[in-house]
Length: 207
Image 1 (cartoon, rainbow, N blue to C red):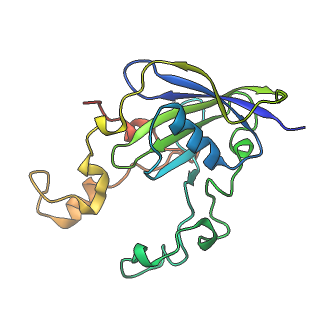
Image 2 (image 1 turned 180 degrees about the vertical axis):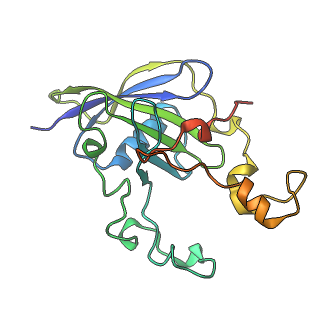
């Protein structure tokens, strides 16, 4: 019998804002991605990823919206994305994506957690947790929004942080003039022993 997962999605903002979504366990994660954005009233036109998480809400394995196309990691020259097929079928077969992973593979047991990041320039962060496993209701259509609290901000209300652009960030007052020192200062925090990285990297203040 199909399992229905009741998932709570909490937006990381000052005021409490969350949504409860019921969704089938055996559908691709992209359905939860779309249901989350719909529940918060956002358009789904930016890149995003789910991350396996733990009790401290640290980030583990990344499950991106789509698998990267063949040759992406080994390309010596910038790839022309306008000429590439970015469908999941063109990515590496062993690369996880929201199309290849089911919701139940990320949320197998009650209290399983994940972090969902939407728009990597504005870094909207959502804390996602499985709160209940249910049987499907006769005649019900899933996914469905079953609970909501708080008013979600507009996705454009947070400014783009050029620091998230990495090497594309223009040099300015923060540049030391020493390329090696600049590279050292801009290195990402190393992953901890459990394979997770701190969510502090995702924190940004709302405007």
